[in-house]
Length: 299
Image (cartoon, rainbow, N blue to C red; front, side):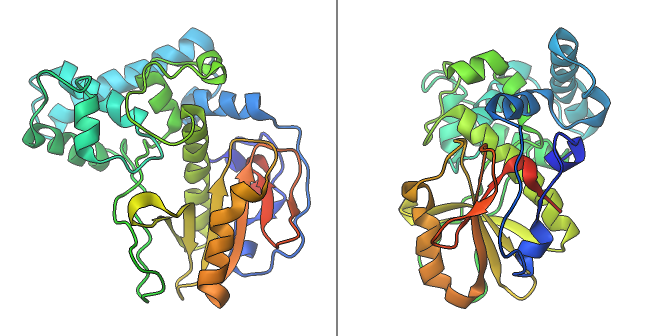
C-alpha cells in the first residue's frame, strides 16, 4: 500500500496532474512528521498486518522472511544448501537500499569483507528468485531513447518490495532508525540509512501512482555519480517529471542543485521538478521547483 492508500493524510498534490504539466501552484499542509514516516516505514504497507504493532508485527515480518528462505526458494525449484548465506546476502542487500552498490560489493558485505565469500553462481539465483517472488524490486536506470544526456549510468537502484522488510532483515526498529543506529549496515552509501529507507518508501508510492497514470519510473545517475536524481517519471511521449526524496523538513538550494541542472539540460522535455520531503507544507520555490510532503502526494 502507498502512503495515500494508508490514509494517514488527505493527498493534495496529484502525480497525474504533474505529469500533464497542470499542477500550477502547490498547496496543502499536513501534521504528518518525521516520526510518523518512520512509523510507516516500520509498520509496512502489507494490508493484513497493518493493524499489528510491537512484537506481533515484528514476528509477522520475521516469519515472512523466514518463509522466503525455508519454503519459497524450494517452491521455485532451488535448494538453499546454506540458509545462513542467503540470510546474510539478504541483509547486505537490505543495507544497500536506495543505492547502486555493485553486486560484488553486496556479496562482499555479506561476509564482512573477508572470509568464505559465496560464489557468484550462488548469489545470482538469490537475485533472480527474489525478484521473481517480488521481494527484490530494483529500480531501473533512465536511459532515454533520444540521446539527451551522455554518460548515463546503467546500474539499478536496490529496493526490497517494502522498506519494512529491509528494517526487519537488518534487525532494527523505529527507535534505532531515529537514533541513527547503522551498526548493521556495512554497504557504503551516501547519507543515512533512514534517509535511504525514506527514499524507498517514496519510490514505492510513486511507482503506484505512476502505474495509475500509465507512466514509467526510473532513476538517473551519471557515470561516476556526479549527478543523481532519485526518480524520473516518464510519460509515453518521453517527457518526464523529476523528483528527489529528502528526509528533512526544509529544502535549500543544495537539495535542488541536481534538479536545477536537469531543468537546463532537458528544457521543454521536463514537465516539472519537485522535492518530496517530511515537511508540513506543499509550495513552489522561486526557481519553480515544487516541494511536497510525502503524505500529500497522491494519484
